[in-house]
Length: 209
Image (cartoon, rainbow, N blue to C red; front, side, top):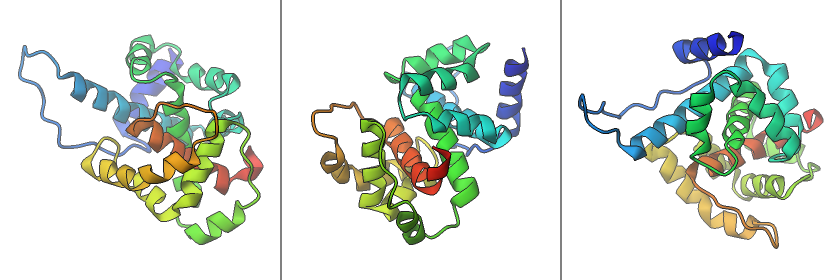
């Protein structure tokens, strides 16, 4: 019950979230547009995860301390959806590892909230010694290091907006060269945003990982 009430509080206050805007409600009785539903789920997941990180930063840091996309991190992140299974089912349909969206939102909130005003040059220099622990972390770190300015633009755009699509398109050419050898990953706009957020967090707070 406590987690369900907390979820409602996050939605009501919009803590850490950014409005999506632009979506017209479906006419009464009309079947929902699958694309609109998916976009809404992605946006709400991002907002919820940022709300958790803002309200419970130490819990978020515990999740982010685990290797990115590891079973350990998956278990830690899944805890935040206990009691809201219908929402979790919707999110699971969007990607292979739905907890990645939770991790991405948490990383985004903690990075922007604690280090968002730090110069990108200082960030890259300060995180020069950060080494990846998983192939996913290797990809995340490489993407941000390849073009910090373009990568930051992804986080500055609201999720599922044309601005986000444009920002992601600018860094896509870098991802091919960053893909770890022998590793195949399915990337979409949501997972790319997560990779960028995690990359920035790992560089900004290496002592927390």
